[in-house]
Amino acid sequence: MKVAVVYTMEGCPFCQMIKEELEKNNLPYIARDINEYEDEYEEFVRVTENEYVPALMLLTLDEKENASNVKLLAPDRDYEDIYEGVEMVKTYFLN
Image (cartoon, rainbow, N blue to C red; front, side, top):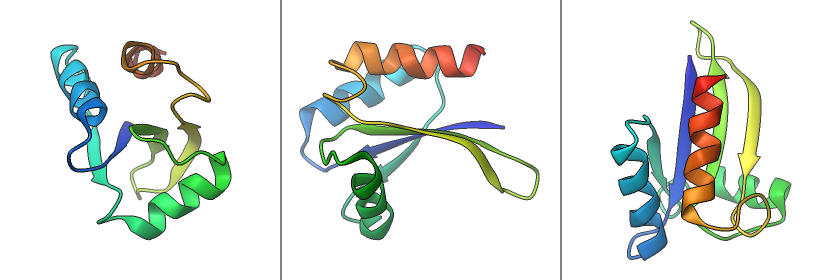
């Protein structure tokens, strides 16, 4: 099963925008507040060397919930704006 995780921060207008765009495009996602999932997000930042939000993690889970094909997408590194990020998620689910 393909999964999109969106790392967000409370009060971030761009985070709200990307969630709205994902919903408008009927793209399922799991929202993770970076303060609530601090350790997980710190690992994301360490790997991507980018701490901006909203950030995306695309992955595949098998029936035992083992992750594979993990792709980390950071704003200003992998996509320039919210709409480009949403298009990347859309492409991920279509392939």
